[in-house]
Image (tube, rainbow, N blue to C red; front, top):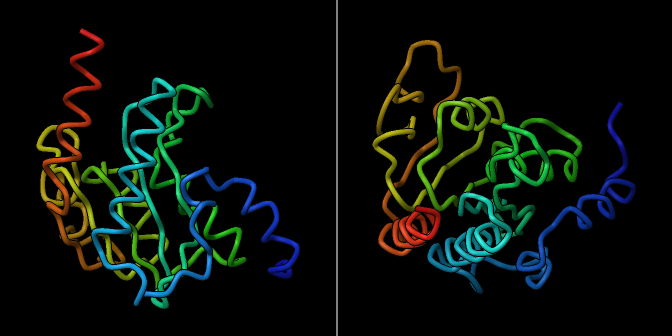
Length: 180
């Protein structure tokens, strides 16, 4: 049974990160353009790195420009291999909306999604996936299995790669160099 959005909203907002909470959930498209949403995703990635997580951040936005969820990787903190930024953003937005499908939404993520995340994005029926850095080793959109082109993929969102790729790549490089 679906919950009333008024009942879901407080819990969903509590799950929002600081950078997302700083932005109104009623942001309009006229206020933000694509790089601004990616900038928020990059802030999430930086916050993840500061927590010792692989620096990947995601922002899920409705077609009207409402920011529904922001997240950074939390696999270490949650001891959960599925706690990727994309999955966490999808979970929050789905709870907020009371539905597992988000066909009017776009996801901005700092790194090309892996196979697990690509499958989840497909199941959520997202309209568009915009990512930053390409991931030749672990990516599954333009690399590896190219999930959205497979005949077993039920829904293929529009994808746009390379947005703020240099910034996202530099953040990842710096994170791993500091650990060597």
